[in-house]
Image 1: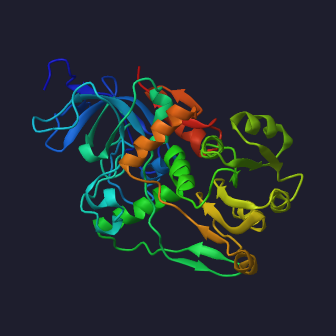
Image 2 (image 1 turned 180 degrees about the vertical axis):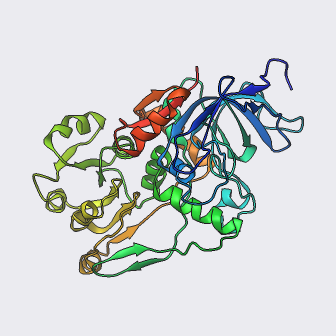
Length: 384
């Protein structure tokens, strides 16, 4: 261990279910002891840690993670210590957190043997230092603001689970009973992805759709995911349509890159999309089943409703899907390599994540702002 590294550091812990996070430092012990990394791990000095809805898994103990726990899975920082056998990463590298490797790197989540989720199973980035598995790490350019890069990195996955589709109802069900640790990891992955992280979710899903430059791509919602989705769709060469409520959002949507703005309060969004020839992809990023239902009729032939947010119920007009060969689908975010693609594309094309920065001492303010939908547009903890 380098003599320049601290013996202890500050971190925000979830100590009790449903209670505010507690910051542990010299004035509020017990102190967090710095530990050198073992083989397959590196230690990172955190520069920025995104506050995500998925942090509520730990705060509210949606699934038993074990407490106390440091949340945070959107991490950017500098490597400060590596084990002797580390081949890729070195001290001083600017990195971001990804996922864990092995089978999960290849998308084979149900055979995951690492049982490791940053900020869920292991302590995450809401701290001055974090220990990461090497396969959970991707390279970050030094000329991108860490606070704006962090929300692009969320690489939490969703695997296709059982959907029961009816003409008036579509819902996802799963049974949470006595879970093996592996089953817990799989369900945590589902929950995390369903609550959708920003940059990776929008970028990787849109680029993997069967859509070509000039095609109509609509983004429903102008929040944390939506403001990025509009930028990505525009930079990819699609005719980008923003769908939201209220005329006051038109100028902002246009500034982001929307070629057309549809005010769903003033007109039927499906009819408006059909006037444009129908949308090849509609990315639904706002968690409203009713809002999603209004869009299905706006799909073009072979169009796809891409659901990236959770709605309790979704009424599906089956005949519309049949007549247009249309479909409804979800998409997994991606791998650590996809994280690097997301950051590179954003940097080269000028996509910018809009964030509100908070110091560690205001972690609860950042979390509450995000949970209450007040954040414009992503809350990020920054460490100076």
